[in-house]
Amino acid sequence: MGKIKKIFRKTRMFWASKFQKCTGWRITNRVQHGSCPDDMDRFRMSDGFEDPGKWERSLKQAFEDAKTDKEMADVLRYAFLEEDPAASFRHFQELPASGAISRLLAKLGVDKSGVIADVGCGRGHLAYALHKMGHERLTAMDPNGNYFTGTAYLSSLNDHNIEIVNDLCKWRETYGKFDAIVSAGTVHHWQHIPQVAIDCRRTMKPGAYWLMISEFYARTPREFLSLLSNHPTAKRYGSYEWAYPASVYADLIQSVGFKLAGVIPWSYNKNEFLYTPTTLDQQLTRWVNRNLLKSNGTVEAFWNEVDLFRRFRFGPTNYLAPQVMIFQRVGIGEN
Ligand SMILES: C[S@@+](CC[C@H](N)C(=O)[O-])C[C@H]1O[C@@H](n2cnc3c(N)ncnc32)[C@H](O)[C@@H]1O
Image (cartoon, rainbow, N blue to C red; front, side, top):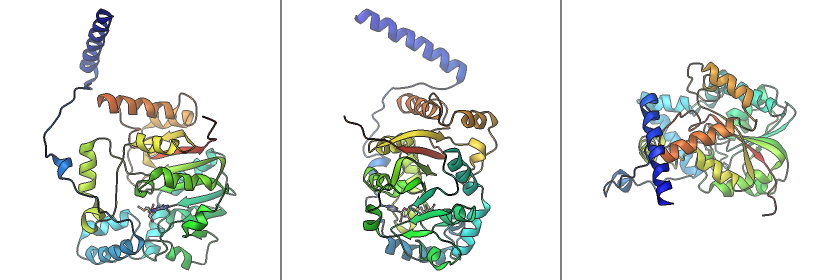
């Protein structure tokens, strides 16, 4: 038995080194123990706040800071958090993201009369843009009802019929209402992801889809440290942020009655779901168009990449920070 194992290991090492020479990709599962204290030991972030009142006050401070700090002004524009919410709503509508989301919903069978919630909508620019594209039955949900950081600006507009929900008790009493949920840059703010996912699931019809768009990903501990230490609002104002590997979102959400049904990778159709355009990767885009929901399609491609990367730190990385993870509400079975 020992002999067979040895032969198997030698063969694997032989092919791994051949592969490495051909592709330049390094395969390693060697563990380095490092030192203590290291940068992770020195990292302190446990007191990040996720409080609407504090977030509103911080954003007002950010408006002041942005008057003399171009970097902060750019951050506010990029995050659709300008002092003039109307400008941010317009800016968002000019980008391809809402059109891409609307087309993806149609591909999933959710047409313009479908019942859709934007969960963790913040100001609600996505729900508003979808409404302007002709989606008729929208809910914008966020526990934050403030003017600059929550839904009060959207409430103040009289040119839409979007239902606004701030009350978590009301949200938790909503059963089987939505054909689809969309969320953008939101799930990483949930300090207990499965618990909030259960609240979302309850509001969805069986088989309904949840498009989890533009999440905050860190593929490695080093990347996590770099992203968190340089996050503009976490660093300056102490807001709560956390970045996870994509596979963590998949596992946590699947653990409470969802199935990962499709994944739109980085660079698909020039990153149309995100706010950082890339050049067109035609081959990838065509392949995803054909295989989005198929067995042996994008979910398989996602797990293959994840598996190679988390075990050996090598391989392509299109699916490690996907533009959209598509979950479907499924039955919970018997065991
Ligand atoms: C970074 S913001 C994203 C806002 C918006 N989706 C966007 O694209 O700008 C994260 C949002 O998640 C919301 N949030 C926090 N806890 C939540 C919960 N339990 N359920 C729903 N949303 C929550 C916050 O209030 C905040 O508005």
